[in-house]
Image 1 (tube, rainbow, N blue to C red):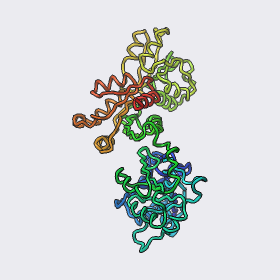
Image 2 (image 1 turned 180 degrees about the vertical axis):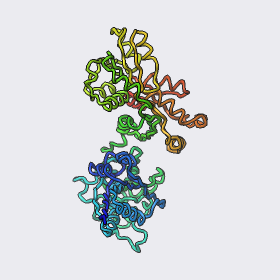
Image 3 (image 1 turned 180 degrees about the horizontal axis):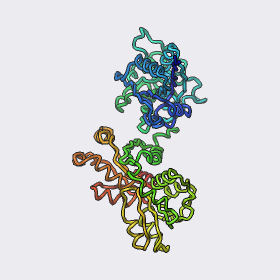
Image 4 (image 1 turned 30 degrees about the horizontal axis):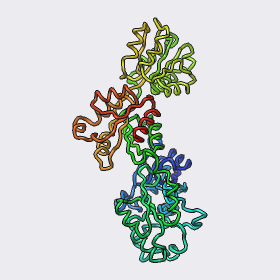
Length: 511
């Protein structure tokens, strides 16, 4: 009889919200998991580290809205482990700080299932830090307490020693306490904490939508009510809150609070998202393009087989480089097959990608568009020369047409295609219609513009969904396409790169 193999559960602290605060070990566990079970406060971006066929299960609990009860979550972990699976249990913050990770660990141990704890950055320290509040400071306090703001409602009486807390602790951090703020404040004052004690509430700490309200025990309830602050919040009470006036940093970033839609293909969007996020923006990724292999490899295989007959190869995008070399290697060749060719690249990003394969571009025009490549070739004798142009199935015709006018023989081959993703439309329309307004939409190519329009459809373009949204373009070609499609572009990058687009957006908002 075959021995039955149990799986293993990793209880992972997913951090406070900023996905960059996941630990290296936590990321490795996600990458190796067969099943990921994640909470409401665990950023879904972390799921992108998962393997292709990983089973993803959401078990978020938000207020009284529970996808699964805690008992059912416990049983789910047991059942999946008994199937022999490796499970990454993603919990917001740290699993052992008011995260019920201890309960889950005990259930696994009772069922003789191997489990491992992967600590995470708790919001109790991260949210105040991002709000510019050090929890300890030698000039203010050396004592610190973490307290739940939401005790088990089944308890007959509180476990919190309010007298010791109010009189003996310099900095007090309450987690999950915004609904009980009035009671927390009353208990602190009633047990001896001065009414003028500084206090702060940090909502969505470490995330682009972070919001901080400060006051004193005497006025904070009213201030929070006026600000409309709701869960999730961290509460910090103590003299260290006053340090925020000089240490505030996260919320001072120039794009703080701006919600920006990124339409670039998902695997290419990271640089734009990272740059805008560092400036404070909340980026929503809605790729209007999916990059897929060509339907037929016949032409590219014929070109690869006769590479020695070409004098030039011209790459117009990073995707063109990646897909060309992928097929080259699949055909049993390596970069030595291009030893007789000169190369041209549109833009530094394309040239950098080509360099990763060991080839330096002979031509990188000053301006990152097809017309500039044509200008660069005007001083080079290409009459009668064969030029290979590997690029997208649908692309502007100007480059092959103008090179042919110079006497070159241009072989334009499709090495990849762009298609519209199927699953984004409903979610996009929901975001555009939500009360949390979208501030900006970015376009990084003509394809992102036309696909965005097709994704929305005429019924949504005529109902003012886009009326108050600023639109930004990576350069004049994209801007021209957008205007033809009826979009009003307010921002057009002067340098036609991702960094150039970010610079243009920053300049716009700084005005």
